Image 1 (cartoon, one colour):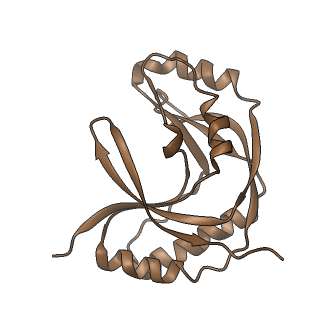
Image 2: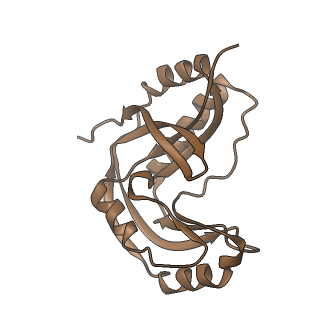
Length: 185
């Protein structure tokens, strides 16, 4: 039996952009803010993946040909839409076909390797906090007060493969490999 790792593919904004997101944090009871070094936009959560499957993924991801593209951060919200908020997020501006093209390439690769993979709707966002159920009012107030948020535009120039380890203090992410996107001419 081969070992497995809990993996995901993500876009990691530059430090200056992540600092802008950290500036949105404010003391709220029962809200755990995402540390700067863990802020990312998940393209595809892969779950527990065998080493053989991981190797097949990295071989195919090395050949993805999507051009680098600018990506703006805009607006905030909560998940789920109904019921107590569990996640506070910053969104991505609409109309970014290269982001969806990149996600489609990744989905195609993942499904070709693991045909039973669930391909669900993609809601691009950066999770900035997780909430306990009793943080209802505070989370809703935070979302209202930042609904007009417009962050900096940044260049997406790579996709990153991360391993995620769940700890009592929260998840710990470790970068395994980066896949550069095609330079624009």
